[in-house]
Length: 179
Image (tube, rainbow, N blue to C red):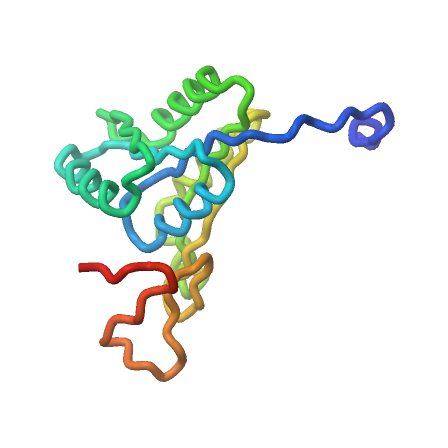
């Protein structure tokens, strides 16, 4: 193992170019920071949504057009309500389409206020990470969204302590007000 990790006779890799796929379970406060993170590492960004319910897909398209109009949204069909298989199949297509790129998969992940609450929720993201573990050109990144009273990261709006939570916060600098 040490010999394999040694820097003897090692040629550093070429600079990376990323094709970024943001997994989109819905368009909400946890997804938007993940989209912004994706934009920060590449101009080649796509949203990826697995369609389970066509009616929900129509609503998602409307939200996506409003919040990420410059990023294409790829909708993957899943007639058997599977999430992992369609994503893995699509990522294989992206690898073939972009053979020189590193395919970066961004998974928006919420962090519940209490550790045990996370045990109650779906673990599709974790299962997908395991499924992609042996793919050398695929990098998986989680962008966490903290639920509850934790301060938000990546430019999200925060309220100072003691501020009435029944009124909406002021928009983050450089952001417009939602109408």
